[in-house]
Image (cartoon, rainbow, N blue to C red; front, top):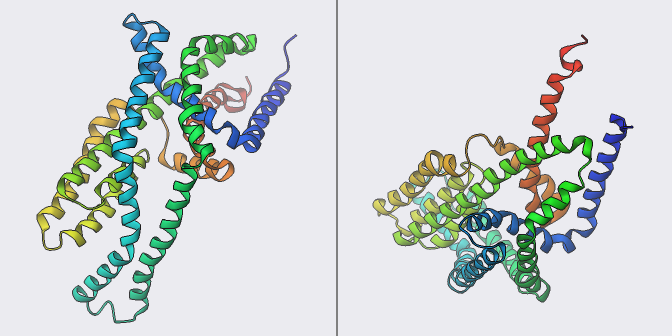
Length: 350
């Protein structure tokens, strides 16, 4: 005798509530395991590609682990010190940049700013606030990242979890599939397939887009000679998963810095502007359509809301799972809408 719909909904709601409570109370403990699962999920297609070339799962995982570790070491030794140094210098230079901006406004638009005016005072105070708060925030983040617990989490637990999950991926999926309720197994497999397709298209594709754009912006701005170009490029790349936001914020920051550094050198300023215009054009017309696709169905507003809600509820762990959960909820909502349109409630009684 099958369970009634009401009882099934009750059980699924209880399971969802238990998961939320687990994230709420054990978020810090689960963080390295969630990170490891994300890494394994991201790298699983690479392992499957290697298996298709005739390698075993163990050999594929070993190659992926070696390449990933080598990449991490190179980035840590070559890029991280310069990135941290530029970020600290940018925070420390904020007051000077704000005062220079105020001076430029005073000379260019003398009627707009009077000496000691409220607007001028506000502009000057912005730099001091950024210097103090930004420096404190960066130092706190660096101190936290340098702690023993975080080092163990980042350098030991996460890679170990990722490697084990990558090795046992097929066995793990088979075990979970065997535990599905038989009455709904087909529907669940169909939903999971759609969720995986959405996550693969969005999470993996968007991560690759952010990486490409971050490298492009950082390298291009450094070649132009823009100070703090590495920081601006990384920031623009990291937030590029929200359409246009990375280009707008990164472009505004880069052009603002270029105005102070290359004042009267309009060619250099135009090149900085062109870097973001070209990057946005290529990203929107070539990179994103090929790597992400047009059928993902995740609206930018939905992503921002998910990041805000899950970040405020579960902290950094919430930020990590916000996008995958947003994709999952999007698929589930579309599934429920389809069921609703097929129901008597929508079509009326027969």
